[in-house]
Length: 97
Image 1: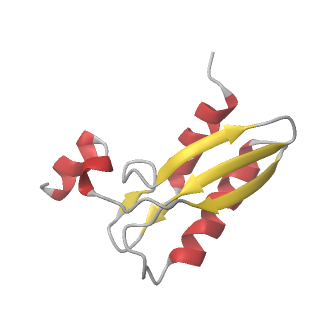
Image 2: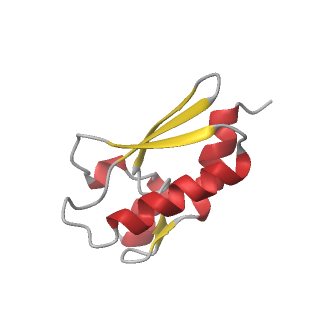
């Protein structure tokens, strides 16, 4: 049986970083999904601190997560810097990394 966090993570594969062409989960941008009684907290990082799509991507993640849970979804920007090693292996292969 899948946990609610797993269900949300799966749904977030629909959110694409258009500059790279891969989803936010494959890219390793979703750093944590914490499910509490009435709140889901999603910690996300971006491939670049100056990402022009930051607010758009965060809103898409929040909206998509809200579609699969009845809890309030809160977004938090993580502090760590993104590195290609954070990507899933298939995503690294797709980009030739």
